[in-house]
Amino acid sequence: MLRVWVAPIAGLALVLGLAGSARAQLVDKKALTLAEARKIAAAAEAEATKNNLRLAIAVLDDGGHPLLVERMDDTQTGSVDVAIAKGRTAALFKRETKLFEEAVASGRVGILKLDGVMPVEGGVPLVYAGKVIGAIGVSGATGQQDGMVARAAAATLK
Image (cartoon, rainbow, N blue to C red; front, top):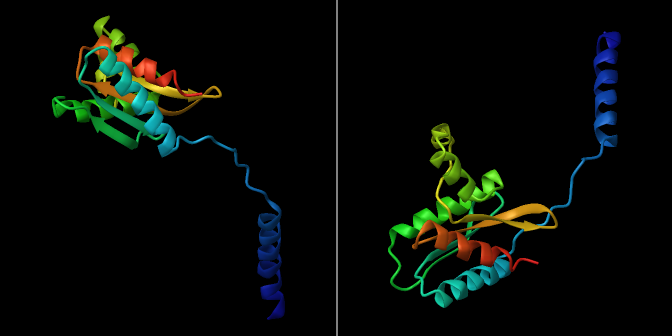
Protein backbone atom coordinates (compact mmCIF):
# COMPACT_ATOMS: atom_id res chain seq x y z
CA MET A 1 0.00 0.00 0.00
CA LEU A 2 2.88 2.36 0.75
CA ARG A 3 4.31 1.91 -2.75
CA VAL A 4 1.06 3.22 -4.27
CA TRP A 5 1.65 6.64 -2.65
CA VAL A 6 5.40 6.96 -3.20
CA ALA A 7 5.31 7.88 -6.89
CA PRO A 8 2.58 10.56 -6.62
CA ILE A 9 4.22 12.13 -3.57
CA ALA A 10 7.63 12.13 -5.26
CA GLY A 11 6.10 13.74 -8.34
CA LEU A 12 4.38 16.39 -6.26
CA ALA A 13 7.61 17.17 -4.44
CA LEU A 14 9.44 17.53 -7.75
CA VAL A 15 6.80 19.93 -9.11
CA LEU A 16 6.75 21.98 -5.92
CA GLY A 17 10.53 22.10 -5.86
CA LEU A 18 10.69 23.36 -9.43
CA ALA A 19 7.93 25.87 -8.84
CA GLY A 20 9.67 27.19 -5.75
CA SER A 21 12.94 27.77 -7.60
CA ALA A 22 11.38 29.48 -10.61
CA ARG A 23 11.57 33.27 -10.55
CA ALA A 24 9.02 35.54 -12.16
CA GLN A 25 10.29 37.32 -15.25
CA LEU A 26 8.93 40.85 -14.70
CA VAL A 27 9.88 44.21 -16.14
CA ASP A 28 9.94 47.63 -14.57
CA LYS A 29 7.46 49.94 -16.21
CA LYS A 30 6.95 53.68 -16.00
CA ALA A 31 3.41 54.76 -15.22
CA LEU A 32 1.67 58.06 -15.70
CA THR A 33 0.81 59.73 -12.38
CA LEU A 34 -2.11 61.98 -11.62
CA ALA A 35 0.33 64.83 -10.94
CA GLU A 36 1.85 64.43 -14.42
CA ALA A 37 -1.62 64.10 -15.97
CA ARG A 38 -2.51 67.44 -14.39
CA LYS A 39 0.59 69.07 -15.92
CA ILE A 40 -0.24 67.68 -19.36
CA ALA A 41 -3.87 68.84 -19.10
CA ALA A 42 -2.74 72.28 -17.94
CA ALA A 43 -0.44 72.53 -20.97
CA ALA A 44 -3.34 71.58 -23.24
CA GLU A 45 -5.61 74.14 -21.60
CA ALA A 46 -2.94 76.85 -21.94
CA GLU A 47 -2.49 76.04 -25.64
CA ALA A 48 -6.25 76.06 -26.17
CA THR A 49 -6.64 79.39 -24.37
CA LYS A 50 -3.77 80.90 -26.39
CA ASN A 51 -5.64 79.91 -29.57
CA ASN A 52 -9.07 80.99 -28.26
CA LEU A 53 -10.41 77.40 -28.29
CA ARG A 54 -12.87 75.74 -25.92
CA LEU A 55 -12.01 72.06 -25.59
CA ALA A 56 -12.54 68.86 -23.67
CA ILE A 57 -9.25 67.31 -22.56
CA ALA A 58 -8.72 63.71 -21.43
CA VAL A 59 -5.47 62.23 -20.15
CA LEU A 60 -5.47 58.43 -20.07
CA ASP A 61 -3.14 55.69 -18.81
CA ASP A 62 -1.52 53.11 -21.10
CA GLY A 63 -4.61 50.88 -20.82
CA GLY A 64 -6.86 53.64 -22.14
CA HIS A 65 -8.45 54.44 -18.77
CA PRO A 66 -9.07 58.11 -17.94
CA LEU A 67 -6.86 59.65 -15.25
CA LEU A 68 -8.15 63.17 -15.74
CA VAL A 69 -10.95 64.68 -17.81
CA GLU A 70 -11.64 68.40 -18.10
CA ARG A 71 -14.18 70.39 -20.06
CA MET A 72 -13.32 74.02 -20.52
CA ASP A 73 -16.11 76.55 -20.07
CA ASP A 74 -18.49 76.79 -23.04
CA THR A 75 -17.29 73.51 -24.59
CA GLN A 76 -20.05 71.32 -25.98
CA THR A 77 -20.70 68.37 -23.68
CA GLY A 78 -20.47 65.83 -26.51
CA SER A 79 -16.76 66.58 -26.81
CA VAL A 80 -16.04 64.91 -23.46
CA ASP A 81 -16.79 61.39 -24.75
CA VAL A 82 -15.03 62.13 -28.02
CA ALA A 83 -11.86 63.30 -26.21
CA ILE A 84 -11.84 60.11 -24.13
CA ALA A 85 -12.34 57.96 -27.25
CA LYS A 86 -9.51 59.74 -29.07
CA GLY A 87 -7.18 59.28 -26.12
CA ARG A 88 -8.14 55.62 -25.71
CA THR A 89 -7.41 54.96 -29.39
CA ALA A 90 -4.00 56.63 -29.13
CA ALA A 91 -3.13 54.68 -25.98
CA LEU A 92 -4.29 51.26 -27.16
CA PHE A 93 -2.89 51.48 -30.68
CA LYS A 94 0.22 53.51 -29.73
CA ARG A 95 -0.22 56.02 -32.51
CA GLU A 96 -1.93 59.30 -33.25
CA THR A 97 -5.58 59.12 -34.24
CA LYS A 98 -4.67 61.34 -37.18
CA LEU A 99 -3.13 58.26 -38.85
CA PHE A 100 -6.46 56.43 -38.66
CA GLU A 101 -8.29 59.46 -40.04
CA GLU A 102 -5.88 59.66 -42.97
CA ALA A 103 -6.21 55.93 -43.64
CA VAL A 104 -10.01 56.12 -43.75
CA ALA A 105 -9.85 59.21 -45.97
CA SER A 106 -7.62 57.31 -48.40
CA GLY A 107 -10.20 54.54 -48.68
CA ARG A 108 -9.10 52.05 -46.01
CA VAL A 109 -12.59 51.87 -44.52
CA GLY A 110 -11.85 48.48 -42.95
CA ILE A 111 -10.25 50.46 -40.13
CA LEU A 112 -13.75 51.44 -39.06
CA LYS A 113 -14.31 47.80 -38.01
CA LEU A 114 -11.42 47.85 -35.50
CA ASP A 115 -12.75 47.85 -31.95
CA GLY A 116 -11.95 51.04 -30.11
CA VAL A 117 -10.75 53.13 -33.05
CA MET A 118 -11.77 56.79 -33.18
CA PRO A 119 -10.44 57.86 -36.61
CA VAL A 120 -10.49 61.60 -35.91
CA GLU A 121 -7.43 63.75 -35.25
CA GLY A 122 -6.86 64.81 -31.65
CA GLY A 123 -5.56 61.69 -29.90
CA VAL A 124 -1.81 61.53 -29.22
CA PRO A 125 0.22 58.91 -27.35
CA LEU A 126 2.28 60.06 -24.37
CA VAL A 127 5.79 58.69 -24.78
CA TYR A 128 8.44 58.53 -22.07
CA ALA A 129 11.85 56.88 -22.60
CA GLY A 130 10.60 55.45 -25.88
CA LYS A 131 7.54 53.75 -24.35
CA VAL A 132 3.88 54.72 -24.54
CA ILE A 133 2.74 55.37 -20.97
CA GLY A 134 -0.63 56.91 -21.81
CA ALA A 135 -2.32 59.31 -24.17
CA ILE A 136 -4.14 62.60 -24.43
CA GLY A 137 -7.38 63.12 -26.28
CA VAL A 138 -8.69 66.56 -27.21
CA SER A 139 -12.02 67.48 -28.78
CA GLY A 140 -14.14 70.56 -29.38
CA ALA A 141 -12.55 72.37 -32.30
CA THR A 142 -11.53 71.17 -35.76
CA GLY A 143 -9.55 67.94 -35.92
CA GLN A 144 -6.43 69.89 -36.86
CA GLN A 145 -6.82 72.25 -33.91
CA ASP A 146 -7.52 69.36 -31.54
CA GLY A 147 -4.38 67.61 -32.80
CA MET A 148 -2.27 70.75 -32.47
CA VAL A 149 -3.30 71.17 -28.83
CA ALA A 150 -2.81 67.47 -28.04
CA ARG A 151 0.68 67.41 -29.58
CA ALA A 152 1.71 70.59 -27.73
CA ALA A 153 0.55 69.06 -24.43
CA ALA A 154 2.23 65.70 -25.15
CA ALA A 155 5.51 67.51 -25.84
CA THR A 156 5.61 68.71 -22.22
CA LEU A 157 6.15 65.15 -20.94
CA LYS A 158 9.82 64.87 -20.00
